[in-house]
Length: 201
Image (cartoon, rainbow, N blue to C red; front, side, top):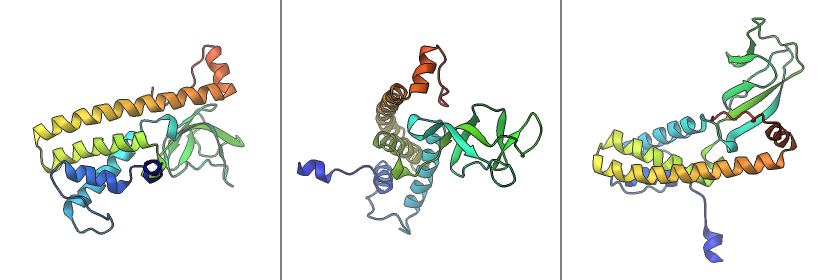
């Protein structure tokens, strides 16, 4: 029981220390203003990979058929954490922070609300453990290649990354299947032979 009580999810600090380990550097105890160039580079690469991988769209960071309200000017502001957005009932696209009606060439929309599928950027600590671990190993390989460029080490980290990616994709697919079974609308779409929109397909 004690082991379970002490279990913690992967943090950004853990991820950076995994990255430092690939180049033989000692772990750090804090990230804020460490003064170490390698730590600063690792933090940047971790943030880049987190954003890049989340942008592909997964079950954990995708809102389906989300009702996006219009502002007082009848414009639809795109959420600041939206990595991708796709309207499900109208032909709108993202432009300059708002949805753009490309049929009528205007930001002013006639609808009271707009329904969208939104892929959102979430902080590292808000995503599932399998995603955190995969992102950490992906970032570690990129970091090692940029800082050190040792082919032998990269082969090792690439194998670990592939296994973490497989585990993550399996976990996300399982979550997607479970959510589909719990959602009557998605179930009805599946029975009718219409697959629900998934941004990663």
